[in-house]
Image (cartoon, rainbow, N blue to C red; front, side, top):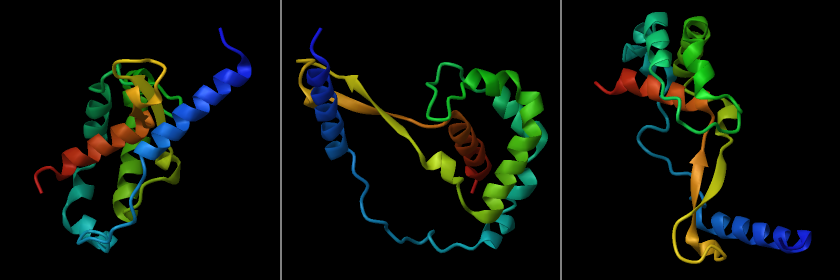
Length: 149
């Protein structure tokens, strides 16, 4: 095994390489940027957010999805679906009404995953994006409400 300083410099090089690959562009204003909250209510999405749908959705989550920055495994969401359906439903309605995603869910992890060739070259890794499980679940739940639009 290498020295601590050598391992640190390798890790820093990997971080720098992944940072250079994954940069956000400038904020782009588009047709949807300035939609007001009443737009969401006119679409009828709020009426479709029910506790029954939320519970059914949570029970159907896949347990093999990696845990993100929140440390909450999908298994807990799935096994506690009945108890979590009401707060999950209320949170969905708040997101739809305010048209805003919770700040806590803006944090993501990028984990290096080896692709091929030399394991010592940082260029041979790609970043795997890990997101909070509750965020992913909410995103998919809300997507299911808007697919027919």
